Image 1: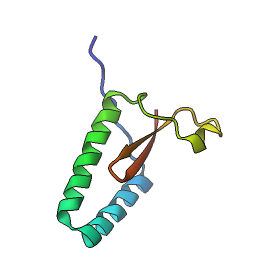
Image 2: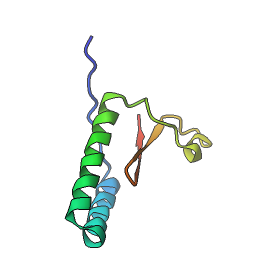
Image 3: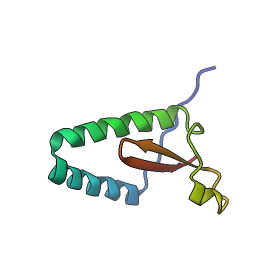
Image 4: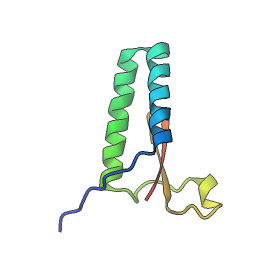
Length: 83
């Protein structure tokens, strides 16, 4: 049986954060660093699509019953998502 990849819903706030990060990285570190960061995030999102349950439950959310949230590091970025 083939596994179906999930299509993530990226919240508007997360999209804005990504745009802010892009501007900051480009200004502070240059285009090559942004390309590397973007490539790392692309791999991270593909891994989330394939195995969404495989990452860690963030400690600060588990205390509040947030057991359906997961956390993964992508380079210097922390990605938190809901499964």
